[in-house]
Image (cartoon, rainbow over all chains, first blue to last red; front, side):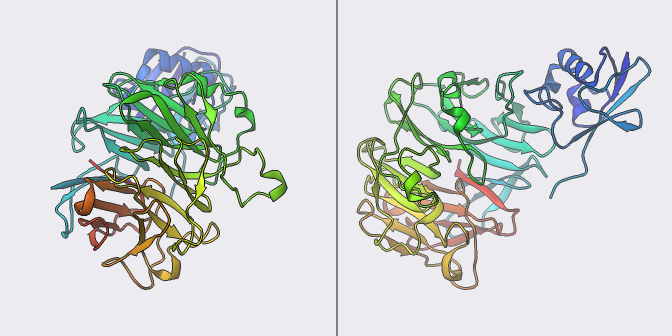
Length: 86
Length: 356
């Protein structure tokens, strides 16, 4: 299972956990599985279309990841707010 | 004591004070987050805030105490698996049945709650309008910003969207039809105006004591309807307004001939005309307008007042009026606009003002 790493406020929505093992073959599958395990996360990372929100960055290990990025059991998925704002 | 809910670019401010005084900040919530709109349902005492996180998307939050914990309302989302995502909630309005509320948002969507605002459902008939694929947003998005209920009759509703015009329902939102006759979109060529849906309504309010009367601030134009939105009459031209462009609109709920607007120069210069901040009042249904600016900035003041940033408290000669600007100033009047005071300043850019 891939390891998903979250920061606040997402970690708070995931039961206070900053690191979780989640089943899934792609980033989208893992994030959907995360929503099922922790329903309070629903809508915060993926929107209704299943698209990663515009100002959220997902890294798979050291590389940018997208919804379709394939994952292996040793991969680490980092979910971070983007450097943006005003 | 008056409580104002001021939604800003950097959080919600609950201000408390008395007329002619600087209000104190009683609470700040959602620090750093854009709060598009906040209101209190006087029936339940419950507070609502629409927050659009730049990172995590739009949500509606609920509380009984704006300085305490807020709970996320459920159901504020579009159907999963589609090709559209909810962008923002623009307004939340109590309905005409116990625990019924409406919320309007971008992209031109209406939500309903029947449990006092804790859970919400999309109004499917409006979502499934067959012309939806041809709808175009205004500069602020395709915002459903105005929901005018009919006092005592939950079946009758009027909605307004930028830029998809007025929509009317006579069956509580089960079916919808247009209410646009008489509106003139000067921003499209004359030959394409007939039947266009590109109608950029900026604000819409119903007169509670004469509910077939509605007032509208349009994208260039101020209008009145005396037949519940079926047809519209121009009341912004040659009637004393320095401009018929602006965003917010308020009415005195006891006087169906009353309306207040805050003109800006034009769509290409969205600032108060001549560097002076003035509210304009009509008490003859738009035949004439009178400037109300005593106590407001009178020189070198180029303010922008957004569509949800103007509200009132009470009615008649002692009616309170409050508005905020993107400059971070909030102004108030305790005498229906005759004189004004500064209620707050140096806040973040103000998106909305509502009397709690």
